[in-house]
Image (cartoon, rainbow, N blue to C red):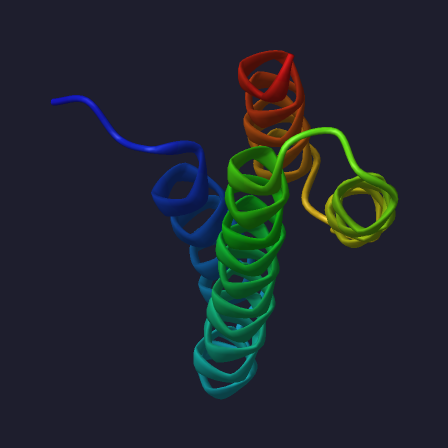
Length: 98
């Protein structure tokens, strides 16, 4: 079965907590991790949307400013593989803009 990195991290965290005799903490930890992934995914979507809008605008001053904003948002993402995907999306939009 193929698990995403998120699912694997959640499962490992929960198993470690349960083995250490703290099943109630495991549930709280899993919820906390899920919240962090949800926030990071939201930031990725926002940065990608801003980059797409900037790409459609062309190469003007405002478009460059928006592209820098999208880049800063993508760089602020905590989860490394989500951040990498967000940065790749911004770069793809930058290339599409010309």
